[in-house]
Image (cartoon, rainbow, N blue to C red; front, side, top):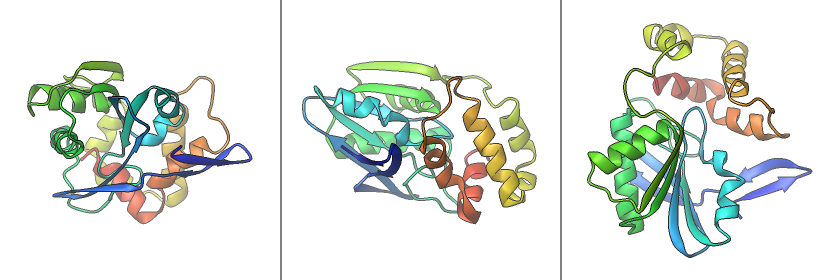
Length: 205
């Protein structure tokens, strides 16, 4: 399994493999064997989103999970192209790297738009595609996201505690049952510190 638990708390989500893109390293892992299925996360999450689903699928399928560039365990740095188009190009490169021609794909949030662009504009082929709570087109940058787009420099200058409170509240807003111990902290960790804070707002620029 790609994660370990300590008293019910996630202490590791191992993405041991690396793939070099023009803008940095994407980290990924594959589990088990069988017909391939690729899990594509959205924002502000990471492949940790699949922490329960991936091991369950891996009982009968070969499961690929990865962190988009700028997210989770993948590289975060200034100057990265983190647009949906760039994520789709990187996803297409990953599929080629893995030698997958017609995998099943499951995608969430902006992962849905990434998967659709990869299918329709990057020439990829999927055996089947499952989208849930997905961004698929049109103007989706509303509410908080619209404010970030309009005032990105202001958000980048928030004190640490204010930034962390904003991201944590945004994450909590996505669940009506709450997070199990350690899960919220694990989702929040990549966005903490000066580099993480810059990376969080960079994705909306």
